[in-house]
Image (tube, rainbow, N blue to C red; front, side):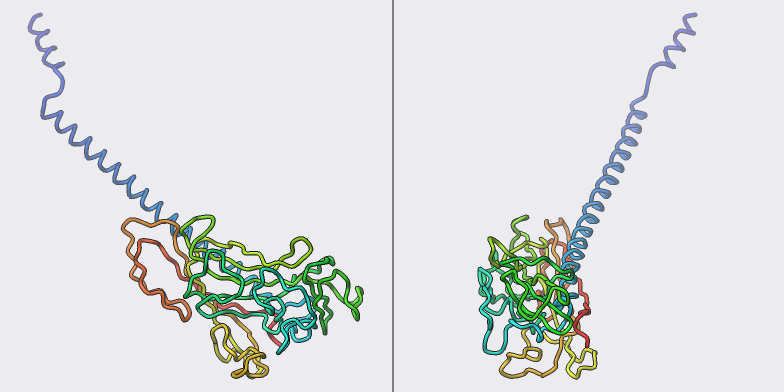
Length: 328
């Protein structure tokens, strides 16, 4: 009986030191493996989220600009800016004495309908101050058009009364003389100037796409500065010009080129029209990413940003946009 008890006690003695060490080693390896899997999954999640964010910002910014550009030179029932009375003409930016929107971006900013698309190459020189300043090596894109659908008459808002052959720019809320409500329609004038500011009001320290936009306040036209897309670091545009009126692009030029500007003292080619717009965007992440290496040379359009390599993720995108109202 005593021997059986002693044998039973020996079988219940527990783990030896060697067995315990082996168990601890195996457990440690399992824990280390689990931690590594979690860390790698977390890093992959952060990278994928960062990529998705810059892609989403680029898509939204490009879609916003594209929607404007595609409808440039839409003046309601026609697309002939030179047929709209009250527009800027050579030597007179405001021939009918309309109210200049405030703060003023220039006497012709809202009225130069002969140039449905305009811009400033690698700089900001509009008289209306940029909100927080503007990035120096980024373009300004100005788009002029009207609403697609007719709008109610509204005193104090710049509007165009349009038929299929002519138009009239006005602001008093009354159908202009020579037009009837039966064979014409009223459309709100839209003017947007896109630029890049060095810091966002929504996410301080992050560059952002902004725009000066024409609107109305207290019965008078005003220029409002709106934030469009935080994270946009640079915007560039080149315009596709048709010189010989065959509805094909003959060359691409930078904004401000005199070839399509009837008011230019030299360099204007009569009949030259803007058919397409080639747009580049460089979008930057909101926060830095540890260990991110980026030796790419960013050169959108005619700008050269060089190699940034500052641990911010970036994405450069471009798109050529056909202007619906440009062809004959």
